[in-house]
Image (cartoon, rainbow, N blue to C red; front, side):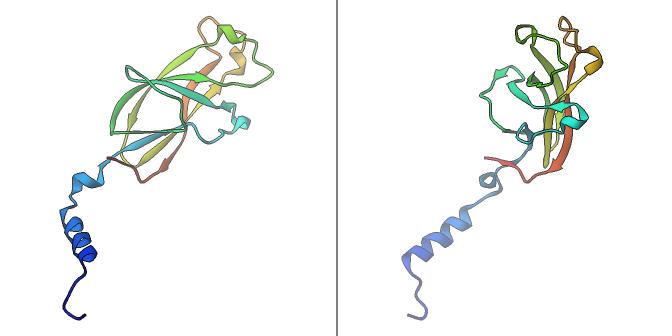
Length: 139
């Protein structure tokens, strides 16, 4: 029928009119441990275990509001030159300024010249090995 609108179309139009900027979500950035970093550059995977004062469940990506974060990482270095036993390995902290629209790819840089030093864990450093653009919104 011309001039009449079905009930479902009318409801959809009303709901669309109610959407606001807050319904879309706030801009965010992401931490990522998903991609394998290039081992040819002495980079290895890491696991995020804590963000600021909150323990986190391990997952490949974390959406965060823009700001400064203290990130606790555990290295997963699998290199035959590493002479540090598993029980002597531990975490390191990385302070990172997260910007909206940016994905930070995290890794462990293996310092092979310090591969015997387990006490100070100088054999690795937490790094951002790549940054990429991402569309990210937190609801």
